[in-house]
Image (cartoon, rainbow, N blue to C red):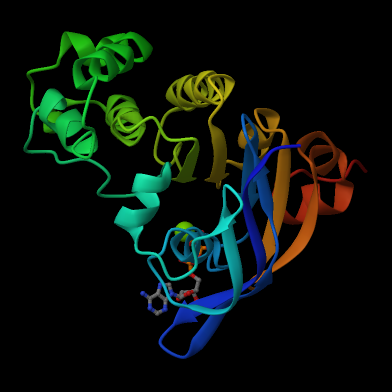
Length: 239
Ligand SMILES: Nc1ncnc2c1ncn2[C@@H]1O[C@H](COP(=O)(O)OP(=O)(O)OP(=O)(O)O)[C@@H](O)[C@H]1O
Ligand SMILES: [Mg+2]
């Protein structure tokens, strides 16, 4: 087992208000782990706390076995993690290539090789490399956000609702890409509202409710659990 991320009793929030309470989760290399839960449960807050965007009130966050508590996001990026927020994850007024250049700004070498790799992973971006990102479709924008996050070759990706606002076909496309990225050795921790679809592509899942982990299991087991299904996945009990 190769844990790249581990939170230990992580407690965080805004101002002096605790939002996430005593959260202990982990992520291994090449794993896809999905966090599901109702609106306002604290899912985005959890990712922000892991990524150094919020103060840690209690507990610890370990990345590659070292504590990153108190580190700021750019330090965490330089250690090999990347975060794709739900919105404002690309620069619409810049070209596709310029967006990727910004993603790779900390790279000292092999910039062109990494750019070529991203264009291989997302050929539709290569065709539009000089166009403004504002011209892209929703799925292509999300592709660009993923590619931008991969420009520094991270070992961990945090994704806040990567399939939000996409058509079913584009959701499937993005989930396939996420699987390809994980197969390259990247651990992926994502939040999803399209819970059932996301869990079908995942190894494990956590249910976050009211700022606490309510449930943790393999993705298959969560999908098969009638209580979780009814409460969080919209699966109706058979009469
Ligand atoms: N910047 C902020 N300042 C103060 N409170 C906030 C802030 N952002 C979120 N919150 C509060 O924290 C709680 C959890 O919000 P969070 O965005 O983490 O939930 P979520 O699970 O991601 O929900 P959603 O599914 O709607 O994205 C909510 O009660 C929200 O009002
Ligand atoms: Mg959220």
